[in-house]
Image (cartoon, rainbow, N blue to C red; front, side):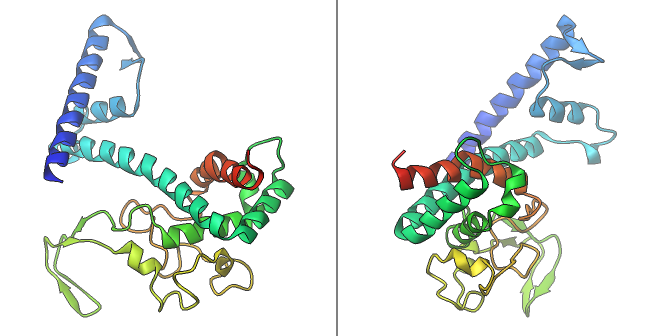
Length: 246
């Protein structure tokens, strides 16, 4: 793991250095608009913020930029594909749920267009399938490490300043206390009307914690545009593929 981190650090360092050199070259060539390079991307913006910071306390370091880039690479690619793969694997085992999802998609969306964000309130079963997949198979079973900035006490346990904390998201999603009704079974109906967890959102007590801690709290409701993209790119196509054979 340490060697892998070192390789990532070296790669990102080279990437930042190349980008910084390109920005400098563009300025020298006059390829700017309103004093800024014409070809700007996220890394360009971060490097500009680094250069234009008022003081050292507000200045982005290369380490900060590497952390942001690594978060984008890891959280923006694997999480979606892992979620889709597990949802498909579970749906194959419960053909009745798969068939109902197909019917729901056909009645709300049809077969002539892609899913849009405005469709989501009318796709309760599909939302329940995604929630249940996140519960049983969180893309990140163990949370991103956090460090305690000061001594604190949680449920009678002393957490000293500087301690590294990891949250076992996988275990929370299978906890029989939080999920008393067959916690190991794939049952999306638990989130539908009449189910024990009807109307669940990530604002409720910590049960499905896949995207819900720290400053990068991506709550269920606020993440709906991304959810629409996932449904559009994965679930709609996968459900039809499995049910109709293409």
